[in-house]
Image 1 (cartoon, one colour):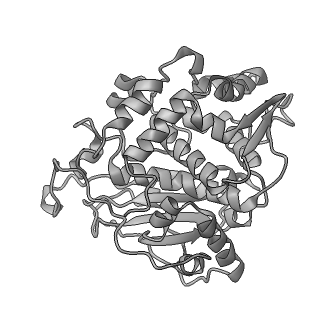
Image 2 (cartoon, helix red, strand yellow; image 1 turned 135 degrees about the horizontal axis):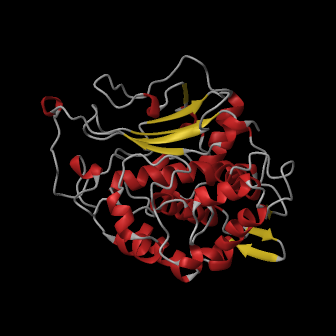
Length: 366
């Protein structure tokens, strides 16, 4: 897997236009947002109908700069292969019903071509200020669809990228703490990446983090139906003042955006850890990884980057657990066994899962 595949999926949303003359939407709405996940879903038990909707794109929302020339993502003529469709079908059929209900209502599912650098995919909620203003899109890279690795391998790769250990620490010094899994489940690993991206799109669709009137998304989206994000995520794990001073509509991978964890035992400063790695202090990187599972406050290292990532990762772990009801998802970290279901059931993660439920993320209703 080359460097382009090591940069996980990013969450993107359109920035608002400053030109009042272009506005055909309600500015600063006061009612809760209407979901962009509309329409009905056909019966699709094996996922073949879902897979058939996929098309290739070279679109990347981050390149559009959301200016006047904004155009929605579009399809290329390149054909999605039979093998890729088979994998997409397996992902859909494995997904819990509440994720299927969102996947089948996407405006468009994309496959992206491998590139020498860049994210492996993206999720995009199209704000009402960018016509047609009702789209929800998800992209996954062709390389991601070829993965044969376990979820633990994927977690390690994300940790490597976050901590500046693109080579896993194997050539730069002693190995940092690594998760291990007894077996590989490639479909579940790919579903995991899709679920993370969907978590970000759902956050924007519900404006879950937009209770504060100063959130930039509040210009085009009303307050969330449930304000639990403020309590379950910010109130338990984050410095709310820091978050409210730096709210955004685009949360890029590995960018903490001045966010600070609330609890000293869970504090994770990405730049500090990266500096320690550059100084060959690999024990600091190991401690950052071990701290996740020692404190049972966050479900993953990526969740400790920012509140938006915390929500997306909590959703991802909930999907993983629900997609594998008869076989526990278990990692090993040194002599410690980590059961994903038990982790979600811990006091703080359980409160966050309840917030996902209160926001409607865990229901099959549109």
